[in-house]
Image (cartoon, rainbow, N blue to C red):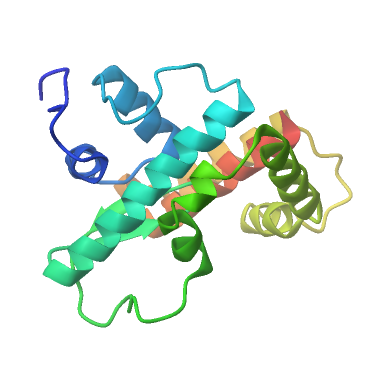
Amino acid sequence: MNNDLACDLDLADQLLILLREEAGGCSEYQLIQRLKTHHSTHVPNLPLTDRLVLFRTHFLVFNALYRLRDRLWGERSGHLQIGALHIQLLPYQAGVAALSEHDPLRDYYLDMSNLRDTSEEDVEKLLTSFWTRMQGGEEKRAALELLGLDGGTQRLDLAVIKRRYRQLVSEHHPDRGGSTTRLQSLNLAMEILERYYS
């Protein structure tokens, strides 16, 4: 693919092109960086260190992802898995992910007034609320359990966690008869724990 995404394409179409190139999926951050590399005019080409810029970029990307997911589902041409840490385009499978279920996140991101009406102060409150919930540790606890580091008395730091992660990746790698799904779960757990222990 050339270095520029067609400017006349909607952001959802640009994301579809990028996700088709990432068979194993990718993170939102990777998608944003690829959009910037390909000179997309739909996301601000500003550093993500400014919280309001970060929020607006995130909102625009997730708005486009939910629109794309709805479209693919309607066309029966694919299923878009949208997660906080992993986004992946999958083949369409009837009945696997019915869009009829109420999805408050979808509602939030498809309501453009949430983009327009969110101030820098609102973003600060959202981030504080998010990190307060995360400190509750459900995500962290689940990631530690997956790596088998949840019940020991051993002092945990990033070096210990990485050592255990590498050991499990070696055991469960598909090239050694392991499961791709298990490997993806280990990668996700490591991504989560790096946030807590870096």
